[in-house]
Length: 107
Image 1: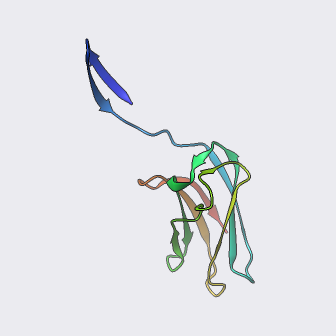
Image 2 (image 1 turned 90 degrees about the vertical axis):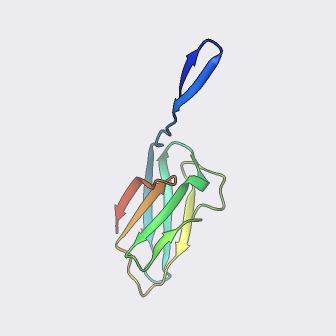
């Protein structure tokens, strides 16, 4: 946050969020359709700020993928089940409402 001050007066000029550093690993079981995404290294991240996108478009967003956590820390894994008939080609982990991409992983 950037504040301008003049004596007793203060005005917020700008606010910004720092993107967390994060490394993710993905594994996919083609028989069961289970897709596991693990934060392997990096900062702790507020779970409500994370979204998971699995391509192709038919699979789409998994917005509550980390709902079992308040804070995602290295070693935490979320597993989503997708239709085994639809082969995923990639995964993106998105951060905050602006959709900042933390990781893109091709499968």
